[in-house]
Image (cartoon, rainbow, N blue to C red; front, side, top):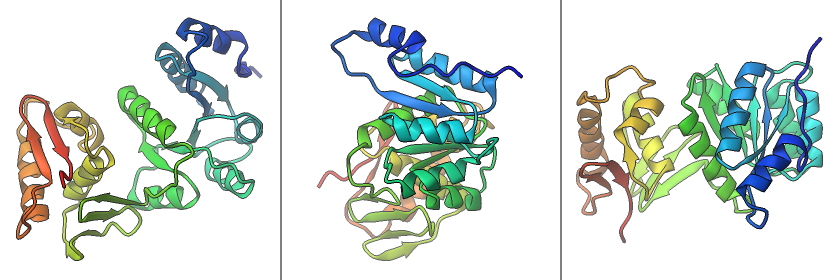
Length: 252
């Protein structure tokens, strides 16, 4: 039975990646726990090309051991793993006091699946299939959060709040009723609050590649969302950045 070589931090290909990135520049170090060897190799290669130190574990038990013993900045955990499933790995890490941010990858992408993953101790949840550019961006965001208090079960922009567990959206204490697509759109915008979100990013994350980038479906949904979160409120939050995309931001 062939199994992938698990390169220890600071050795082998990982060491080469660090050297190429510059010996004096601290690099993010992540662990990919994924039993699909082809998918894992693709991810590890992409992360290393981006200057990130990436290790790999092919089953839950190995992943648990490596995540417990090494100081990683981010863990990427598949839910369906041999020897120990991904959610069990995450729960056990949290019991051991390991607070490394975890991004869950899974073909199970329904709302209940995401809620279960987050409640098990995950910090983010990305359904398969996904675009590597988005995976990389999410990992970078989680890496920046390490060591900061985790308050991301609720996103806040000004007086606008989105609860990721209950899926309730409120502004100024008043509940706003959104359609599922409007909720996903707002969730992604608030996750990236203060940053420009392009139409391509929205198509990949919110529409799952189902529409052509030239379609006006995004503009229509943004318009509907804007009317719901800004109607009867004095301060606008959702802005159109001409030629770039959209941004949600509280300018005080």
